[in-house]
Length: 116
Image 1 (tube, rainbow, N blue to C red):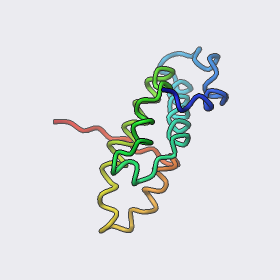
Image 2 (cartoon, helix red, strand yellow):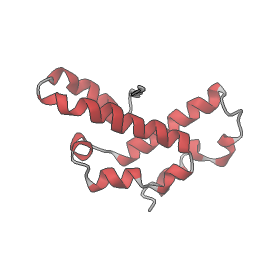
Image 3 (tube, rainbow, N blue to C red):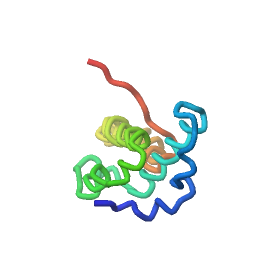
């Protein structure tokens, strides 16, 4: 189900934006703008992420992912790995509150790679 149909009206989702060299600076920036658009539209809270709310699952199963899978991967890493990893520590680390607020609003993008 698509809960994000409305954001497709934003300029960054226009099909003409997709006509770029795949790994160009412009294409990479576009994927990050779209990831920001997805996250801001979903408006997930720490509670949504920590407790896997219906809103959390709606974000993950939204058909907008098919429109730009790269942006969706950026957004899910941001939500699941970064915010999901940091959020349990906020109880004992109130200094993380400002960072988590910026992450939830996608003012900063939390990306990291985990390896086995």
